[in-house]
Length: 548
Ligand SMILES: Nc1ncnc2c1ncn2[C@@H]1O[C@H](COP(=O)(O)OP(=O)(O)O)[C@@H](O)[C@H]1O
Ligand SMILES: [Mg+2]
Image 1 (tube, rainbow, N blue to C red):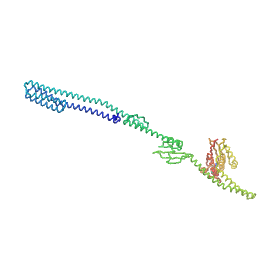
Image 2: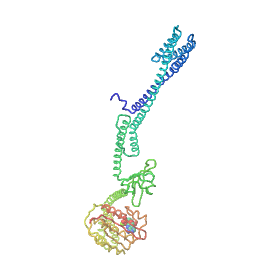
Image 3: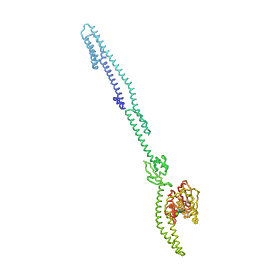
Image 4: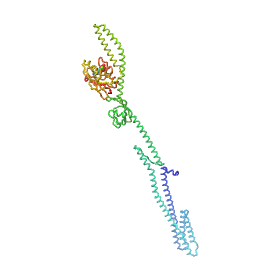
């Protein structure tokens, strides 16, 4: 097979076929040229030598009947005949034709000799001469006929070869077409597969064997398809990983382009209701680039906007309501702790001198029994007692206790607080009552709740309310306790500050009641809220987690 290495390449095969075809054509043309040359030579010899010779022998034959010697006409004919033979020899060169011409020349010599030889018998001499002339004529005719035959034969040969070539070129052409077709068929298959690849489909096997250029191209194509596959797989894996990362983020992440959501993770769905393919809600289109806080009702969102591509944006957001609330709570609790420490210190410093003053004032009052000064001293003692009570209250407020949860009936608790204050408040013209259905026991910090209720009821009375309603109700897992009054209510500026430590609108208020109440309730996981409007009363709501 080594010798046919050229057949392995398409170029070799095409060149081989073309060379074969050219070779055939050239061979046929050369053959025909040779044939035409033979024909041309024969026709020339016939025209220049044999035909004139035949004509001259015929003329000689006629001249023989005239008086024999001198015979200038016959001599002329012989000379013409010699000239014809000479021309013929010049044309024929060497070979069969030259030999025949030389034979004719010899015959002419014979005729010339016979014509000039002295004769005894004129008739015999004329017969011999005629014979010679006839022989020459016969030779000329025989050559003309032979050459005509040869010409005809050469002509036939040329036609035959032409026909043969024509007959051969049909299968040769067909073979060339077939060769081109089979060689180029894989190109069509390859083109189809390339189109599929272009359209994003997975191309099938090309199935082109062979060592030629197309086989090589097919193998290169298949290698390329494998490489593209591999790259696709890697891309898919990376995309999947990215998707997982995106989906596991707490922050909402969305990519938006021309008002359409391209990418949105589950957090973006729950925070903004964004789904991939949906349109961006109006509220999110007004965001500026960079970081911003956005308040939505009771919620606060922290949003970061960055440009994405030519005309897109990437939104990253988080609901920071809880975080802000926790931060606020921590700040408050820290401030309150500091206040508590200070109070404890001051109260401690004040309590001992107060005790001493109270003791000595009482001793002095005993000494002055029955005098006018005793009444004056009584006022001093009373004021000292009031101061002691205030310091006690401060201390009580400043002391933060660990929550002590125990099962207790909240309705009974509310009733006991109301009962405790009822008589005192009734004297001040305030009616306090509990509005509640029995709701069993709950895990609550009873002391904390008692102090909180006491604070709220006293505040209501101090604000000038006539009726104070304490409500206890269960709401799911929570216990909801309300203290509603028909007092003057609050301006919004006041309402905004009531939970601040030391905020008070009363001449002798500490401004600590609500601050401490809220701190205590939040310490056990509850909330205290307030609703109020000027002239419409005030309602405080305590919400406590309270498993039954
Ligand atoms: N029920 C209420 N009606 C109107 N205002 C109230 C009521 N409860 C509290 N307040 C306002 O809140 C302020 C703070 O109350 P609080 O913290 O208990 O301190 P204090 O009672 O010592 O003033 C009060 O001074 C008052 O202005
Ligand atoms: Mg108070």
